[in-house]
Length: 248
Image (cartoon, rainbow, N blue to C red; front, side, top):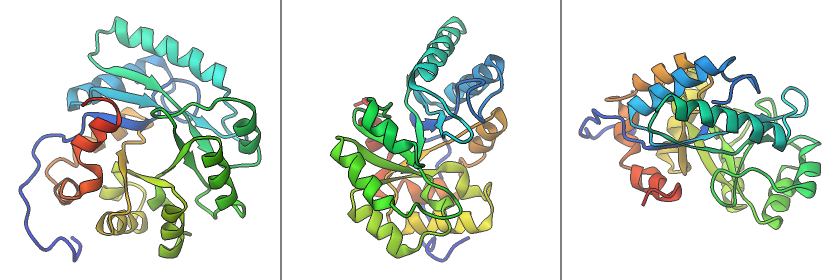
């Protein structure tokens, strides 16, 4: 498929990941599942794939999804009860995906934010252009004691290699979307995803699923060059992700 996949590697026939740090699972709170029934179907399917721990990360985006911490936690607790009642053998945790807009700085200064693991904070930026104060925001995040994790960097086609390197040097970690590898977001994003993998510029793999259909599409990646190449990279082996989320 791509030039850097020259050496054949053993096919990964089983789903290789046990934990997901980025998924939209809470119903009726953003652009994820509309109701609890779809949430349960998504979580059950992910459990069947082999996931043991899922982190629900709803959007916090003032213009479209002005979720508060209290609303997220209340909605998550209801979901957690329904998952337990459905006897799905998966551990659920909650965080948020924070959009870096004008209101983010207010949140950063006013409350303890929802993190994916201890102090790791999941953030996103516009796909149309980076904030003019992006590096100031990264610095502010770190000054507050958080480790910024940029969601789906491959989708920001306005970023150049110099931008990626500058973000990494600034202490930002990258989380790649699994579906980017099969062209779900388009060919340019797919190419960018493999470029980031080739350069070892990705630290975590997340599903970023919003629907049952997307969960089913993820299953189709098993046995593809994406998983085969991915698991040869030191940064995001199953063991490292599992360790990051407390499995080992």
